[in-house]
Image 1 (tube, rainbow, N blue to C red):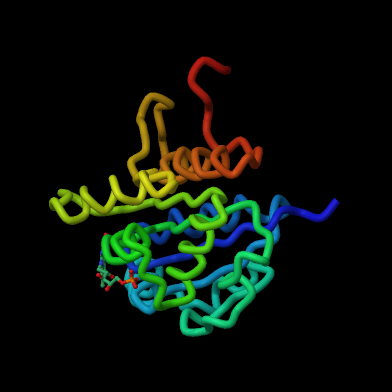
Image 2 (image 1 turned 135 degrees about the vertical axis):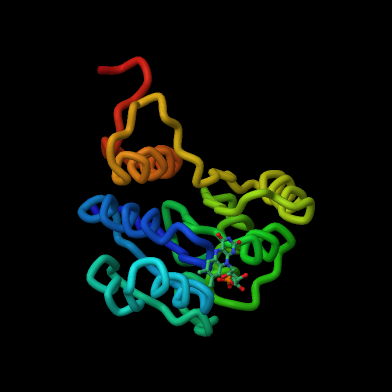
Length: 187
Ligand SMILES: Cc1cc2nc3c(=O)[nH]c(=O)nc-3n(C[C@H](O)[C@H](O)[C@H](O)COP(=O)(O)O)c2cc1C
C-alpha cells in the first residue's frame, strides 16, 4: 500500500525544532511534501543554523513557496492532510481568511476547501486580539489549532520530550501512529 501523503508547511514563527521533530517522525510513515515560507528560511537559520537544503533529505518533494502551479496547490492532488509547523501569526491570519498568495497558504486553503485535516501549530505569546480572532476563524473554517504548548504531565527531561508531545498530537490528528511521548493513562 502507498504511504499517505502529508503536506508540511514551515512558516516563520519560532519553533523550528518542532518542524524538524515532525519531519523525522514522518520518515517511513508518510510521503512528505514540504514547503517553506520566506519567513521560515530566516528563522530556520537563526534558531538552528540550517538552510532549507538541509531539510531536503527529510522530504519526498520540496517546493518553492512561489510555485503556485505545484501539485499541492490543487485539490485534485490527494493527501492525508497538511500541517503548518510552526505557524506564524501572519500565516495563521492568511489561512483563516482565505488568502492564498503563496504555495504554503494556497495548499492550506486547498485543505480547507477539500475538508481534509489542516493542523496549524502557532507559536506566539502573548496573543493579541487579531491572532486570537484568527484562531477562532481558522477553527470555524475547519482547521485544528494546535498551539506549540506542550504539557508537563509526562515529566519531560529533555527538549526532545517536549517536542515529542506536540509531534504526537499532530500525528494523532493525521491518523498516523508513532509513539513519541508517553500517553496519560497508559504505561
Ligand atoms: C527569529 C525570529 C523569530 C520569530 N518568531 C515568531 C514567532 O514566534 N511567531 C510569529 O508569529 N512570528 C515570528 N516571527 C516573525 C515572522 O517571521 C514574520 O512575521 C514573517 O513575516 C512571517 O511570515 P511567514 O508567515 O510568511 O513566514 C519571527 C521572526 C524572526 C526573525
